[in-house]
Amino acid sequence: MLNFSLPESPAHAALRALAAERILILDGAMGTMIQTLNMTEEDFTANGHIHGPGCRHHYHPDHPQMGNNDLLVLTQPQAVEDIQVEFALAGADILETNTFSATTIAQADYGLEGAVHDLNLAGAQVARRAAERAMAADGRPRFVAGAVGPTNRTASISPDVNDPGYRAVTFNDLRLAYGQQIDGLIEGGADLILIETIFDTLNAKAAIFAAYESFAKAGRRLPIMISGTITDASGRTLSGQTPTAFWHSVAHARPFTVGLNCALGAAAMRPHMAEIAGVATSLTCAYPNAGLPNAFGAYDETPDETAAQVADFARDGIVNVVGGCCGTTPDHIRAIADAVAEFAPRKVTA
Ligand SMILES: [Zn+2]
Image: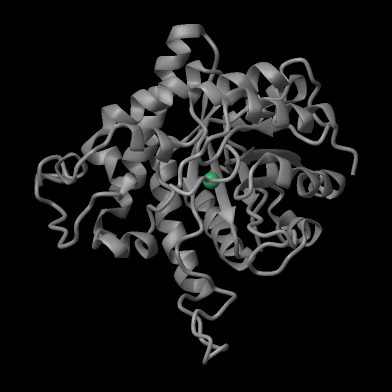
């Protein structure tokens, strides 16, 4: 049972009040911005000196770290903070921490399971600094969403075609890993918890359960944003759910928002977002990719093209929070913020 008797965090009421006035803006793709910096292995590891408490060689990883974007909150925190400030000044109200893969399960690929607490603590602190810098610049409050990714394992589906009962990870493995992540995010000052890019609802349910355990430890309940992803034309998540079924599977968490991110871009997302908006009793959030990736894995959709499609969501009255996922830059976020400004937020009627 999730404990709803805990006091709400102060950000909860502030977010609810803002969301009643207008469509809120979530930031864009950290990964896309990091790619433009062309960082080397030496950059990722700060010349082999991965910082940790008390010792510059604290983690002793035996794997290459290039591509481990989450590590940059420890080794290149200023670069991450500057990107988050750019997104904030482009119009983002909510800044995501750079912690999508900061669980023991996902960091096992890099041999950095031992760094997970520090990654989440630092990830939230870096985003908090960016939020404060942006607020000092223009006087608008910003909120930090602790980003919790799906991990690279699924609790519902066997990765072994010859053994359909096999699971590479259990609900309890995920619950413990997510709990460690969310504890660190809360300690670092996250205002919300964003459980995103959900392809397997059972993974998300483990994250929800873990979040409420962390809230009990912290003595306050943070708003939760829950975002699924639909990766093929069938309109179902990888674990086989329709958007309506997905909502009913996570409604028990009483999320601040529910919605979709990533995947096939805004045009393909629109009918599925409309379906969620028709059933959800929470606010809704959509942050699509900048279209489909090209043959080189890059995104060609211009800020105006993405913004025009996201504006259609707003015109249809199906969104309360919008932003961008893979391929979206500060220019995309600025264009999205401008394009939705004239539209009222979705009214929750269900
Ligand atoms: Zn994405």
